[in-house]
Amino acid sequence: MLPFIRPTIPEPDAWLPYLSASYAQRIFSNSGPAALRLEACLTAKYAAPDREAVLVSSCTAGIAAALLATGATGRVVVPAFTFPATAQAVLQSGCRPVFCDVSRDTWETDPASLEQVLVSYPASAVVHVRPFGFCRDAAVIEETAARHGARVIIDAAAALGGRLETGEPVGRQGVIEAFSMHATKVFGIGEGGALFVDPADAARVRRARNFGIVSGDVAAAGLNAKLSDVHAAIGLAVLDRVEGFIQHRRGIVDRYDRALMSCSWAVRAPRAGIPPMQSYPFLVESPSRAAAVVAGARRKGVELRRYYTPPLHRTTAFGRCERGTIEVSDDLAGRVVCAPVYSDMTDAEADAVIDALLRGGECRD
Image (cartoon, rainbow, N blue to C red):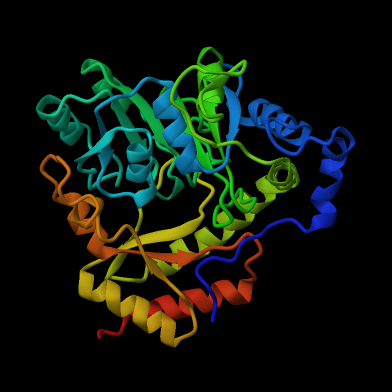
């Protein structure tokens, strides 16, 4: 069985040398030498000139820390079409999520729905999501939120290493962008994440990720969201390789695109910019066809997955949250299917995925 996720984490001999300073200084957390080095490298490669990278233990914890650092209170608007971590981070920050819809054209926060929700349910912040690591310009979301006095934090969990249509690295929009380094991501280190923040906000973010402590005093609300030096060392080794990972994945995606062109029952996702391509999302004609594609591929030895189903406003935990009119999220959640993409996927494996996808799409359960 070809699994949906097959992480590509560098072998220990690639990242252990990055821990030499940590061992010499006996510092393995709380901004150890490997963590400081990775922050500097991420800042130079992706966040500069007007942002700096702050490492966190996960993207979820990072979003919670970002909300705490920016003073978010009460309602925070979140698209219903996203992974549960986005809304869970809102709860962890002491706020409550309010759901808006996404656009059928982009699968991202719909500006008209966001406007409607902000009028009906005034909010202190908006967490805009880059689904599947898409790298679309978020300026219209920032403008919509600003008219209502809400700050925008961007959940770019799967987008680290991606670029906008202009070629500019993602990470420079919203007041803070949050990235995941979970093992399932292209920039995977096991567990971890990074926030790209304005230097003026960095001290508050660092305070929030460290229990709210400043110089021994608990100055504000916070949580433990620090990244260990061991994970940072792995990140430094990944940084040496990530451009090659992304380039390889794009070659696989191009093959999938060509294969999908022959399908009358499916279309590719509305990707934007140059995403790292954690997976290959596509849209099929109906929920029953989505189930048939997944089941048919499994019979051929390939694991596909469906995202993001159910949409968050249909879940037990979030079903009673305030929300605007949500139609597109319901529709997409029933019809989106994702195929695997690996940083070390072979041509034979890609062919197997394509064969399973096409043959699975011919079946109906």
